Length: 223
Length: 202
Image 1 (cartoon, rainbow over the protein chains, first blue to last red):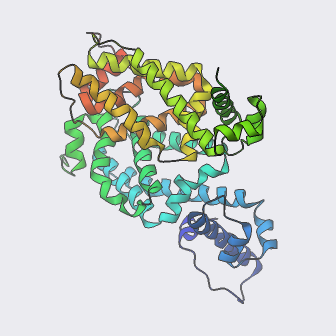
Image 2: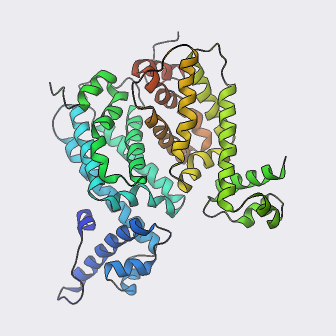
């Protein structure tokens, strides 16, 4: 099993070791995935060569082509794992008990922290993926729908449905738009500081201004 | 049609068909039935030609929005009309939709800032002309980015032809900063209705 966390944190000593073959292949795969993220974030997808990925990972060309079809394949596998990891990161606080607006606030904060903690991953997921071509739009769309569904499924069944049926897509669109923009301008690290205003913007379509403002400031824990 | 316009149209069509990245000068030259020399007399390079194409699309959208409403319309009415007219135009001209909502962003992510400078002062102006001050209910800058995300999603799922279906969402997003949530919901329902929107006109 791939561990996306490893993908983000992987650092290995290079050179000789006594590890079994299977483990070596797995570690090589993860090193390559981590490397494609770092190199792509630093140089841009177009300027990233397989050679540069190999160099960063300390893995041979032959092993690379045993594991991946090409640069694009490697990049898309890495992106997929990162998105899985992001989904997990926001699902945990969102699924925890508590009033719905507070769960949204915490999930959003966890998501923003995820982007801030690894600007290279943020750049690959939000920006560089576009360079793989039109296929990136379908990936983007699938992610967009997935987050909207996640948000909708977690709505409090005790509460009346939102005034607008489109509220989940409006909310997810808001978060993605803001994150995209900060990451595009190289400000991924500062994302946690936009949490209060972004929470407000995400909640408004569901709750209206007053309740959204209260929830964004962390109040209204009156359950 | 001027030669320059033919080149611009060729660029728009080619970008829509095979993306900006895959478009070559040869594609444009053959589509526009001009010589390579003529192309370089008009434009320094592919990017300059693309930028001119984006300018052309935006001018067209701006003119369409401006013609869609009259002084007599209330600000929400005018905003609704303008949004509807723009979405209809994009549906009729899918190549323009591809360029504005898709390719332009891939080529230059900061294009969103330019969209803002077009959309926001125009929307605010509707309120000011009516002698009202636009509210401050949500970040208007975010409205444009939100809209961009929804446009891209709709284009991917249904193609440009599906864009007019976004009218209720688009009206809500553009209305929210200036008029607030309740009025934005009301206008959104007027614009095409959403789930359970049984409250009426007026």
